Image (cartoon, rainbow, N blue to C red; front, side, top):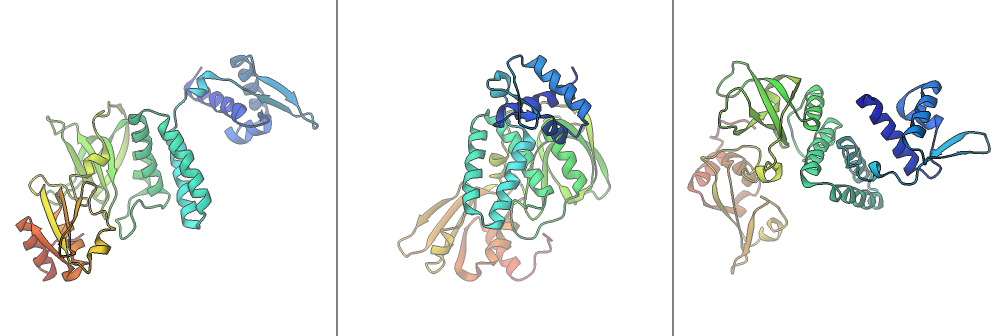
Length: 332
């Protein structure tokens, strides 16, 4: 039995178990886009696969196939596309102000994710993020660079397998297009979207690199399967930066002090996942965390005017003053 045929039979079995009356020929035809003859053949194959299937007829003499206990369905884990569709439904409900539906759908999502191993759940969530971007639901509000629809589809398929992808890339230091065969592990969503991957052709030490997705001229899927690093976690990886820019040279302790008048507002912000907030005796708020990305920090701090003071590092103090004077020649 081919993989596609087995997957279609599994889908019919799921429908036969999940739906109150079971599944009919019309359901099979609609779900799998097949004609009646093919639907009848698949129903017979379901009977062979599941001898305990119950077959009934309704008042219109339509046949229904119903399953009650199917072990191989009970132990099936959540599919990436299923989780993506559920996340899209949640986003649409949020957008439409349907609060009750949001709560219910989120509970369903939590049940699904909690029932699968952490590594599989995280893989599904990464794919879900890609699908939400592809469908126009940004993970973060505000200005963002455009991403080609074709690149999103290729990435989505590469995350599911997982398989290597071939990219033609230009960097800020090297404007000459270079072809790279990489192992995709995640996507960082922000003003600029970054692909986190390993370059199989250049890096002997197998380091993770960030590739700005707007600088990827061309992307192709491959049939080269690779083993995803089991220790890689996109959320942990992102804590090394304030925004999207990563730099080992800049990765150090950052300390900001918000004046008493700005402290109540600043206290509601999550500036960094690992931030530590301390209420000072004078009513001000001290925020501390370790990350890189000084220019992005300065861009953000400018929006607070003179209500915030950078205590350290000294390099950030200097960059912030340069940004305020319009002397930093770096584009977003």
